[in-house]
Length: 416
Image (cartoon, rainbow, N blue to C red; front, top):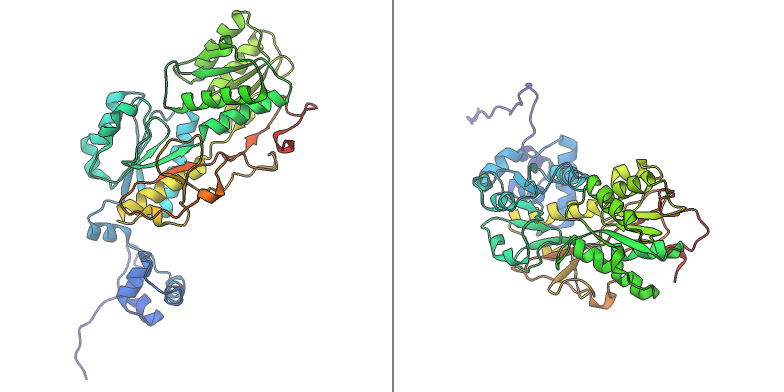
């Protein structure tokens, strides 16, 4: 009888047998190294071999030991998400989506609200907690274009939002100009001619407020509607109370207004409350359009028409790019990312994320995506260049009568 070494089968905490990579390799007729390559999604594996290994994994019920793999790689399996405020629906929804996407690739998320604080945003970048995470998804509001050098960190970083534009880090952005432009155009098609914009940040050159204000101005100019600076209402913060205060000031000023583009849904909610408290009717007297397509917007009375900024795509692409960087791969080599020279976007290397458009039964027949010249889509495979992903906005959601939906008007979908 041949002597050998007895290798007991691995068992989990409940005593059940735990399938090993060796067993998968034997069942698939390949080496353990090949199984490892398939599990870690290395590209130099033939499709036939990959299918064979995946079949064995499915039949045996093999699951990856994420903790052991991270330990071997010197990783924690945890990423950070720094956002201004968890109470804002936009950031709360973004956090939920990022956590969901991270879970799909075996990552856990630590969410750090920076509370609209410059010190908090810098602490999120350079604080001691960075030793606990493998990378950071970072959405600042208080830092600006002059703080680009602050983004030089020694770990994978994905920038989200429009406060800073740089080619030093990977960046996921949404097309705010086109979104606000379409919101304004929609009100103009309903017959509004005295359209106010609420939420402008005075003096801001870069940021969501500045870009959305630009879209508002472009829509007025293209429609030949005279600009009136009295219809531009500033608001440093974008909470409901700020919308109430801003709209009260506009209505009390006596300036005539028949439509409002609110730069987010929270502002729009406050705007609608102020209009109704003045004894006016929505949309008969004043129509309102928001921006963000928050869950709460459909429960307002009347329901709020809003621009969907593509948060699902922002979350998915943020996690995808960060995971690629953590694993030492180039996110720009992925077929989902392409370089483009789209007008109206910041200069530099612009990558357009081909994001799925969120579907609802109440939508216009075509998406409100920003215009990108197809001839300028080029493969972008420079390993050491960061990605700037511009996510197309989703649909304009006519969920109710707040913006005059249902009136005898020409919808955007019917326009050439």
